[in-house]
Length: 531
Image (cartoon, rainbow, N blue to C red):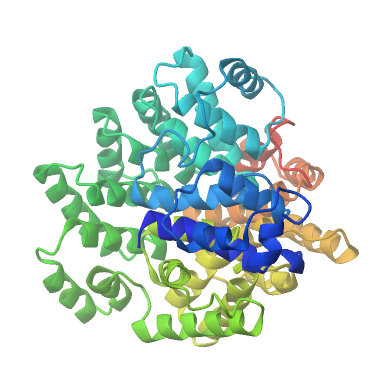
């Protein structure tokens, strides 16, 4: 699929799903909807299907006429480009002309101060700096900029998330960033109680700095915990796909990945990451390994190595069919079988490579199809849980963390709070709750109070808990994420203050809980998610 075809789909898809029905047709859109100068209706066909250059100004016209937030369609185009070329320091479609130095300085000073930044401001700042390869910014300030960007990515949703994620990827791809990113990654993996690993470590895919590679292989040999190991597996898979590892490193990576894949103590997401890395390293020996893993009853890992998917081809086809049927029932029947959308859906629903899948999910999250895909995957999740198919449940939850719907929050709450729910499933379900906006109501207050009570129960469970220390940590991270993302710092503070001092007879899990709760409470006001 060409980049031009993808950009044309972004424009066409947005128009045909416009909130204002009068601009869904080519003629109505050409008229401008009272928001832009009129053009001949044939021009719309050339923009969306002819071989014409698509510019920043043209995409902005679509956003204006369709009443979309500034940057929404540009963000989708950037995520398509990111899949093609992970190392890109500026926007795919920048505004015309050289960046405004004075405006860039204003944004830079704001990002380095204790002031709230919007996603759009991050977008503009990163694009301007990306077009200034010799930007006169001190190394310490550059590091502060990256640190703040990473933190904000973890704390925002939907378009605000997409614009920040793209901005941080651009900054990491800047010529200035290599050694700074490597040093930041080393620091985060040294913290066993870090709340987030993936956002920092994912930046390593933009550099082959020797320090960065050494740190990742150190994690493969002796991981801090499963979360840091999983993040390194994701990054190494991207580096391998880009042919940026020499032969000896590839051999060592394969040996270590097989070790983690066959370790029964590692959770599903580590097994999936290890299998993806082995698949990316090449065909030599993978068929034999897949056969051995199948004989060991590790069919999911074998499927990833052999076919690049964790569930059967039939299950993926059925899922795609349900999504298309849901789109046909809505107003998207003209687009449900569009080749670009079909590829997006296939990648989002069936691809186990984390970076490719994340890019596809980010595009769908800010596209009109997100609601239909979210509803289909709730049904798929319920069915997989009924069959006790945990691999399929994880795959559905991976989609729902991006496209959960408020109507389904009761289900995710039950999974998050259930004492018998496996820790990794409970954590992912909690991430869905934290990522799904919910209108103020008595039910919302009750839900958040239940999460606070469950944090207290898990923290005080001590030796009676069936979980290992790392599983307990996973539960606590997910439960705290819900309250943090919903702005319930009052409840986080209440739970923290109610825990016994671990130095005075408290359980080790109290210490874990206190560290995770304190991370949220220490967030400065200008970074905290708004209720």
